[in-house]
Length: 331
Image (tube, rainbow, N blue to C red; front, side, top):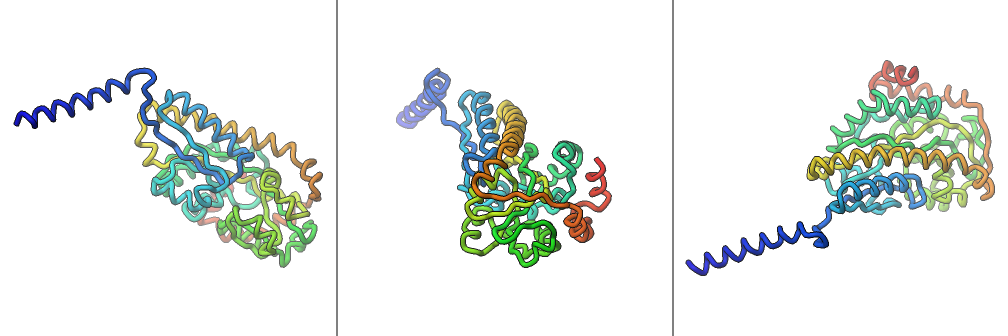
């Protein structure tokens, strides 16, 4: 009996000692790690956004939280990491509307070709009521916290076979797309052979002739070195691609209210840092890409816009109805 009481006293004393030591300066408590994923490389503006996110959270948490950034799809493809967010095995992801289409069909509203007039219109929509409505759907479908919309550039068509000046020039070309049904419908409607493929496989796919080209923004052409495996870029400007910053709700709910507030502050700052980095980088890249051998061509958008009218008719109900489409177009 005495032995049992002595053991109990010792356990309590040791536990109290650890509690006491944890409050002493210089005695470091175990950090909570937030793992953040993206599929760009370390030179991509996504990295800039995450670096700002890391800076603010680590400062606001007084060392309680460590943010680790995993670029280059190190934790998995976009779609795989979205599933990990849902399961709670990864904390944070930045996911494109294309990569989220299988989880949140209504997000395809933003994937409709030519739905945005310009960058100001894009920001007005995603930061407004429609963007918040879709953000709520993302939360519901992925069991996550929606932290804001990032910007992933103006997308153009490119390939290594022919100059694309009209939809007729796309006939027979194998064009890589994201897995979004609307992406696939769009390029098939324009006469190409839409070929869904993970972004990380695209460079090799071009080398091996699995695809002839793709569509992306200027930043991806540069940071992924696609200029090494393609030639002709046409300014179709068919899409302003949106990305979302999301956090697993299982992770978010573990934090104190103070850390949760820091997460929101960091997310807002990260959004602005990422957008500015992408805009600045885009504006400086054409001459550099021309220096790498790429050729750029302006196009008349009207034939391309006419060619995708059926994509709207086919998909309007899935994305919330033609009325919602018109609300976006008229903002």
